[in-house]
Image 1 (tube, each protein chain N blue to C red):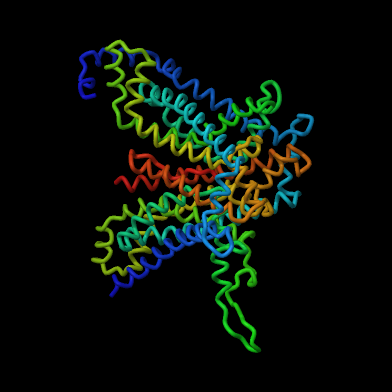
Image 2 (cartoon, rainbow over the protein chains, first blue to last red):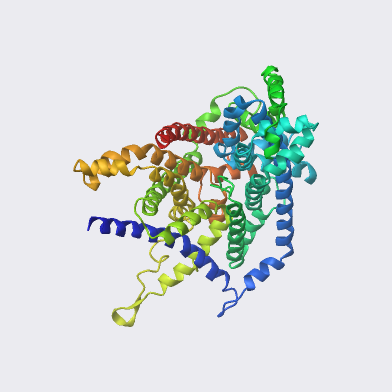
Length: 264
Length: 312
């Protein structure tokens, strides 16, 4: 009797959870299919996907995502490798630094970046190219917790010291060790981190908006103000993209903490 | 790989590595530290310093009093704190019971795996698309709104009453209540993700011991399980609080900035100095950083307590 009662309680909450997950998802799907009056169609998706501005902003954000991944890996792989090899005592400091982007809200971070770097001597908001450099740096920093943790988790599974010594004894230099020994051993960890970084950059609103670059986030907000059905279609597409990214990570399943991807 | 591990030279290399001075070893992480110092620490310090300067650059405490005299600032902090508090409490309670359902509560297995993987997905599904999803569901013409509006009964005099017409009954998605519902979509999954390991860590022996001593399930939860769980519950709630407090994109896309959260106000300050004094804007930002820092420190302390008993 008692256990049965408890199961009902559990069942109740499980159903609440499922409803909360699926009703907005279904509602959005349903709404996104109703652009044509009186019948279901994919018209909203067609309108979104054929809008040159959508394509341009998606291309911009995707490119920035790839550049951010490249820069992140170039910064974090050598740094974390070195930390494992020579300065394990740096770990507490590294961990505090890499969660800072969770402590400092992105809007505050953007505020600080603009105040510090828009004036002389660097004037990083003067030309589009300079602003792209600043925005890349911004993306690298706000996605830092994910990339750091992914590479850190991967590095933990390999014997950095032995691999390094073996490579050294065969005459490798530092670049060769990193590129042909450490990197191949960490490719799944790096892939996981990269997917999260990519999803972060694609969904990012604040930096693109306040640095006035043609990113996907600001474009979506604009479309959300002007139209009714396209936002629902974009929300579904965004769901799909997040789903794919998380799916690939789970598929390779290399102990990556993927708790929070998209910055809010 | 296995052949590389057993290498006769290794001991020699290790000795050489160990003998070098420990300070020189920091050279390898220096570029990263420099990068962070320039692009994260410097901007933060710049805001910090700006908060204590007047427009001529002299030291002043006047900006800090903006918290006491500017009604917009006061209102924005009170709305932000309220929304964060409510969503972390509601999300925390919901998330706790749902985590309970899929661990100790023995909900059906298929539900368990769907809830767990969807929690991972939903906790990551924030920002602009989340706002769009809720507009499509609960907006003026949203999916659920339309369904509820359609539930009508014949009333006296040939008229109809539609008791579930949300917007007729004072509901509005573009309000604090709507924002709360929307935030809950990522809040409770975040709670499920962070509290599930703690619930899984509850040992069967504790329940058995409690039962053997004649304890009811009330005794077990009140005197055994909750005292063990409370640091994780509190820690996770702090995490939810912080994630709502720092949120900007969802609120901006949902309400177009018509709800004065602190983040929205800072956004408007960046765009066009709505406070009329940039330095007061820096004070505003500094206040946010301080609140977030308190959150993370609290979380870290509680998290340490949690891992201690989870390991044992």
